[in-house]
Every structure is written in structure tokens, then in C-alpha cells.
Length: 67
Image 1 (cartoon, rainbow, N blue to C red):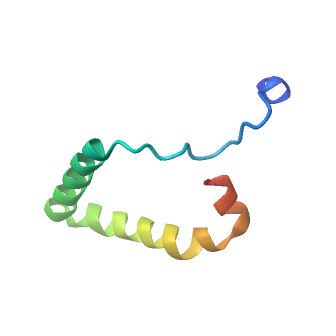
Image 2: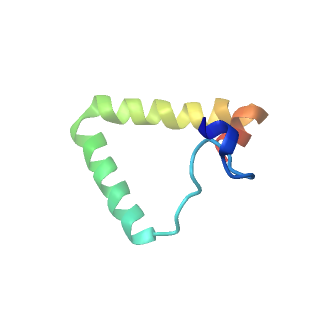
């Protein structure tokens, strides 16, 4: 139902990034601490980052969907 009455110009996918750098620095610090304390978390995050950078950004349809 929503699909028929959705506003024009609305895309599905990831929202635009916010410019809240203070929050971003804190989140990065927490992620790095978890990656050091829990190595499997670090390996998983690294694998997800590499997948995003090397594979998903090379496919135009996926890149457009992810903004």
C-alpha cells in the first residue's frame, strides 16, 4: 500500500550520513575498543569493510541503492 502512495523522489536504501563528528569519534572509539578486546568482532568488521569497499561499490546498482 505504501509503495503506491509514497512521496516522489523517495529512494529505499541507506540514509544519508550525518555530519555529527563528535558522536562519530565516540562510536569509532567504542568500535576500536571492541575490535581489540574481542578479536572475532574486529575480524568481522574488517571483512564487512573490505566487502563494502572492494565489492559493493563496484556494482552500479548496489552503489545507487546505498546512496
